[in-house]
Every structure is written in structure tokens, then in C-alpha cells.
Length: 318
Image (cartoon, rainbow, N blue to C red; front, side, top):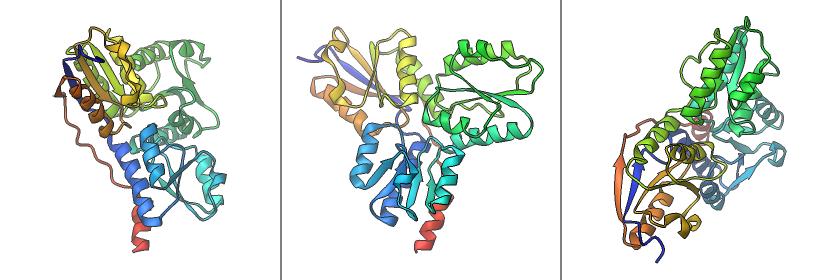
């Protein structure tokens, strides 16, 4: 029988939705209640297949090009942040923008602007091509340089005397990023740190929890989509600690061969992954005879208020 050897499943906390993701999803749901169907969402509201599908069933419509949105419509900008030109195009087309960008991503956008105004060139540690990175990099026409690894740092051709600062994407691997920052500081000793670390609390907490989880289990499952940067980093964190780990969207992705001679399984979930899916996976193992245990490393209490534009539109509606 499949998974017969699995005796115990540990569900690690913290896991799943962070404050920014909860806020973004609630923004779309509130817009559907206020304005009816469809509500246009620029880019996937969060990088999770099941969340996007669920919202689309309710009437959300994900688009990549603002020209697809009828003029005078409401459009929600995704949690990952957006380039300045998207706001300009929305204004030209008289779209009513509700910005669901995570406040911790907005913080990085503001840091870019502040450093640029003070005459700094910026080294930005990121995953090139990710929506969050594209939004941040678009803040400046010049003077910002994306690096993904230590090799990229070595290739940077900047003067040692220049005013330099570094910033990072919010969803990176803590361990890998530390090594990249070390390389940056070695090459450019004068470089200025961000006012506060840019890797967000949820990314940091979930990666730290994974490091605790691997001590108790034979294998780790991370609930998350392949498009989710923070979910992929969780899988990589577990593997870096020497444990087999797999990224799955749901129960349907489980493969029998993974669980040969595995007695204990740990389950975590990326910051954009729904708790419902975590429980479905736990229930699946329970049905096969395993026990379930919640493993709490820490409790998160962070909350963000809804976007000002949404509050304003709600008052106008009433």
C-alpha cells in the first residue's frame, strides 16, 4: 500500500499565508463584493495556482497587459509590486487601481528611490525575471544592477570609490543571500546596507522553521507552486540540510517512490499556499495510518491594513 511506511506527519508552524498574501487575497474578494464580476487582476495576485483558480471561479480575471482591461474599470495590482509605467498606463486609460503590493515590497521600492535621490548606485540581489524584481528594477532607468549569484558580483564593473548601496528581493534564500552579500562587501567595502533587512519576516521565519523541521523528519514536503520564489527556497533549504524535499501544489502531486523506507514526513507551505491544501495532505497520510502532529516553532502576529484606495472606494460606494 502507498505510504505504508509513513508513521508520522509533522505540520510545521509558521507555514502558509503571510500577512501580505492574506491582504492581497482579501483585496480581490472585497472588490468582487463591492464591484461585482469581473474584477481584473494584473498578474497572478499571488504565485499559487490553487489560489488563483479559486479567485477566478469567484469572478476574478487575471491579465498581464493593462490594455486588456476596459477603460474606467477597477484593476487590482498584484502583491509582487509593479513597474512605474504600469501606474502611468492605468492613469492614461482611466483605470481605478487598487494596489495590493505587499507593504514590505513597497518598502524596497521606496529604498531604491531614496538611495537614487542621494546619489547612490544600487546593487539589487534578486531572481532575474521574477515579477517582484522586475518592478523594483524598473524604478530606475540607470544606476541599478541586478545580481543573482557571486559570479554576477564578480562581473560588476563599478568604481571602488562610487557611492553604492545594496538591496534584496524579499523572498530569497537567507543562506545564499548572506554569501552573495559577503561577496559584494568584499568587492565594494564602502557599500551601504539597507536601512533594514529586505528579506521579509515570513521568508525568514519559514526558512528557519524548515531548519528545525529537518531534525525531526526523514523527508520534507513543501506546499507551493513552481512560480513561487519563497516556496522554492523552502524546498532548497531542506535539501541544503541533507533531507529529500519536494515542492507540490497538492495531494495529486505525491509520488509513491518518494516514500520508500520513509517513516516521518514534515509538511511546510510557502507564504502564498492555502492551509486547506496542507490539511488535505495531512488527511491523506492519516487515512493510510499515519499520526499527525503540529510542530510550532513560533506564532506570527503580523497584519497589514487594506489599501487606502479600497477603503476610499468602499466609503464612496456607501
